[in-house]
Length: 319
Figure 1 (cartoon, rainbow, N blue to C red):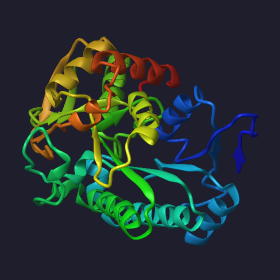
Figure 2: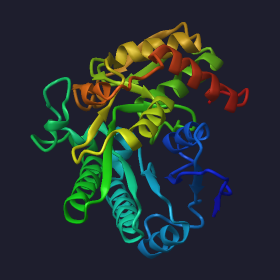
Figure 3: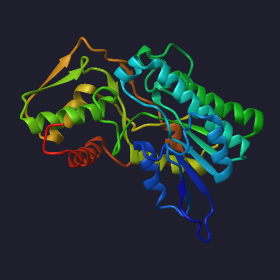
Figure 4: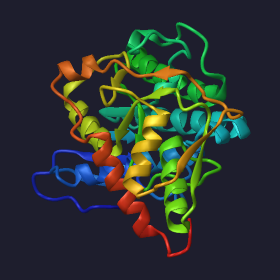
């Protein structure tokens, strides 16, 4: 367990759960520019799936704000292979942290969801009102159901106890400290790893799952972190609020961008035997834009940044 020592004039103690992950670490970087006390706790000290441990730690730490960034995440293959783990782990983390926040009288909580909570064929761009209006995408429904439960918990605690807990729904995220394991990662980090390996090895082709036609929206994790800090004091609604990049890109276009950044000169091969997932998923983030926030990082800039970071973490051998 660790936290920064209090300093004169500190207004808030903010616990960032999942601080070692991609989103959590981005939020730490953003909060480092604020006059706050940052609280963290390692998994070896407090397993967020264990109710009593979470309750005791929150009661001891006494945060004013909790940013619930901890989650079990993964791509299509991981979701399809481990449905029980994705459902149980995420439900346990959410219920334990939100209930502990309530019992400790925590002032504010920000729950981070996912765009996969919305129906597979939701009208595009997806508005917050689309939640629970149709069936989910089967390849990640377990994770989506858990995230929907987290949203509903925040709403329930607002309704029954007047808690000012909010839910933020980011689109597909990428950034430093992402998961680049081909068996469990999302599409963007998986492609970064594939293109880096192909470039280093001098390979002539890279295989991409699916047809390349699905449209996705990608937001740099540091932009999400900025939005989360922005929303702590600027949004207090019961409905979830979308946080997206503002436009979509096809998987084919994404692969082309990453290949260009990696210096790959070969060809793309699309494995159409693999699933595409939801055909189109771009969110309507006009509610957030109306509050005065917009992302700062373009896809090309963000991919450049993350690719350089990833390449530096690798040895001279192919990844």
